[in-house]
Image (cartoon, rainbow, N blue to C red):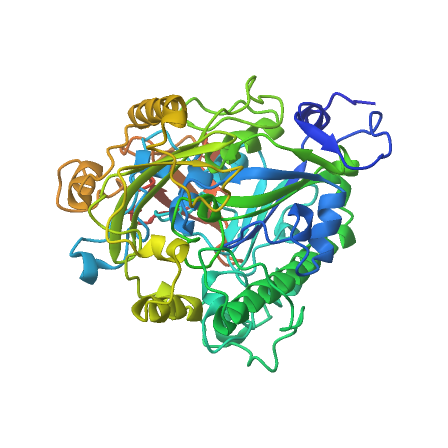
Length: 579
């Protein structure tokens, strides 16, 4: 029995764990050498679920996952909003080190006066899914991307509303991602109701199935509130955070938040049932997490813990280490190296994160995590943060402007409208008015254990000057290490990313050579991924673009299609060769 397999070793390497109850002995259980990995990703998610202490709404599927797995309460996104954070997850690099720190780099051009652009990582950077594909994994994404750059065709075997592990070759290990949108900030908008897209989690792979308006997240296909399932009563007593007023409107938004979580949990259960029905539960590492903190005002987009901290649950095969809690600090930049470590592959040196599980788990756990806030849609700020296991240091590069900046999208939330109304009427208390100050301190320091809502700034308190000095120095070191220049004008950032040109760089057209029946493909653009498809006369073009790695034979009577793409560049044109 290979009890020293990669995943078993990963589980043994989990530290800082506390068992909540006596569990079965798992020391002799065999784990798979090449595990499947399933990511269940929800949006705008603070620690609002029972496994992390909030009993407001029942989440039977997530609670079961936690009981059979390990909970991680100290996971932090690199930004309080999704696209920069997803860039970190996809590459293992901090967004502000690759030009991914401004939310929506390819939109809001009218408001900003800037051209659409993409983040441009160094030429050797690949998406983690492509690196997994190179190790023989089938990689599917259902279906949100949003990486601050267009994913190369080689990134996924399939990324669509139909993408599913069930579309892989028989016996092939998989890395599959499912994104759940019900908990998104927009789920608080009026008129309230669930999007009618949840059935995709029952029908992935069935290409004859049609969703309302194709299941797009912005489709006008909401149920009415009367049609929307109810997971808790509106009479529920909610714990309103001190930065929000306790009014009927705020309580109704809190009800929506938890009701959305109840629906998300049901959808998670549907995917988990598919995994069990396929007999794959005990061959799969399951990871649940949110893409950053909560959806409410003074949560999303900010780099207080309410905007960065999100819960994570990991279930290992055979329930290994079940019922435990791992308190180590984890950053989103750690996900990519950890994925490779879990399948026994050493992470590339360019990754700025460190593995927290697996064969290549870092010898020393994190001492600090880091966060950044820059432009969000049409408004811009420049804030950086560093946090240890107790204290958070924040540096404001635009202290002359307030924390609250009018953002059209956020102001669709009734609670945001309520805050503005009460502010204008002079009815907010001192804590609630902090967000609406007309300027910010240059530095902030919070004791996140004693002051979890980060209300009491200790930066000028003489008792905390040593901690302030420590975290100030750590921030300076981090900014230098990753090459971050906070408050760099965005037009200058674009000029750097485009190497002084006035347009986005374009990947060179790949060159196909045929010699002695072998096909060789090359591309002049350094770091470009090359994808190809072989189309026979009898079949349509495949969905997947294969990754070119070495010369291959092209069957007679077939058509070869090739394109190249370096991340942050425009993809090349497709070239073809008929044989």
